[in-house]
Length: 122
Image 1 (cartoon, rainbow, N blue to C red):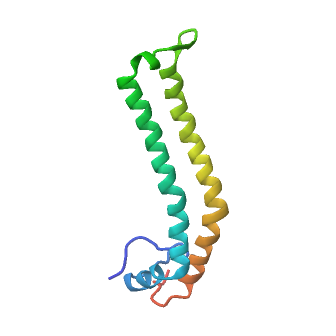
Image 2: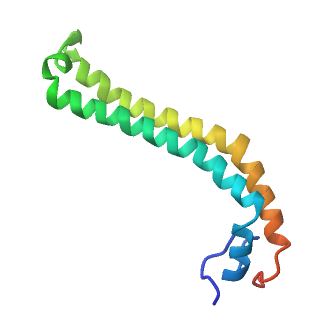
Image 3: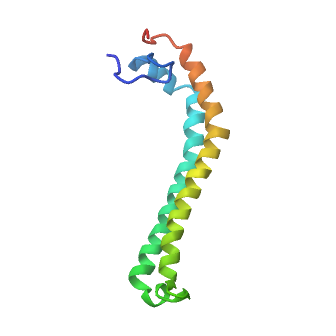
């Protein structure tokens, strides 16, 4: 059975299920997955904790969140805007991390995929 989407090989090419299973077991693929998880899991946990703090404070610390910082700008508005800032910072940090750490590992996985028998003809 062949997969419909193209795999890690060149555009138009792909791997059948057996070839993908073989690639999946390779040390290069495992290193790529581990490097991806090292960034994504802690960053996701940190962002969710930050978001939940905002929600909980908004619900249960109304006096604190309503405290005026400057003019009509209160703590809740500052926290809400910081949610957007943190989202953009995480995206920027991921882009840098992916370029420096993940792309070289992905190149190794691609090179390994090119050597695996069972590649579909493109």
